[in-house]
Image: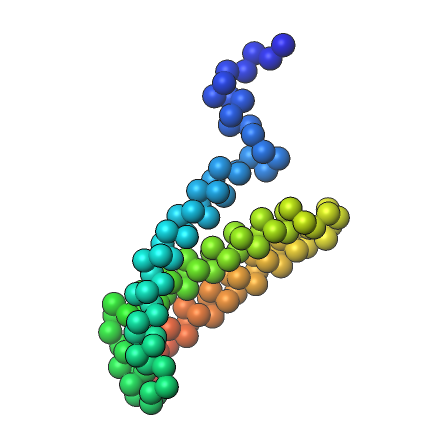
Length: 126
């Protein structure tokens, strides 16, 4: 017989004890991408195929630069969370799973840092 309250039982669900947090984070990043996606794509499409000076002018606008940075951060977090779910569900060896999860986290975070650096460099006119 368990003396745990219903609340205590709910808190312990899942093997990692963070399933709800992961699910909510995945949904929030998806909602963020709904708004950031078009706000990023429109200036990007305007700059696509133009000269370097035109691209610098588009991203010299602080709004465009901040939207692009926000888009990349949210998008790569969303991708990291999605790939993490796939690895947790379909990679069966414990050691391979851990290596895959670490590689996943480092890969997407590395791409996010690279993208933010590139946009910052464009925004500062370098």
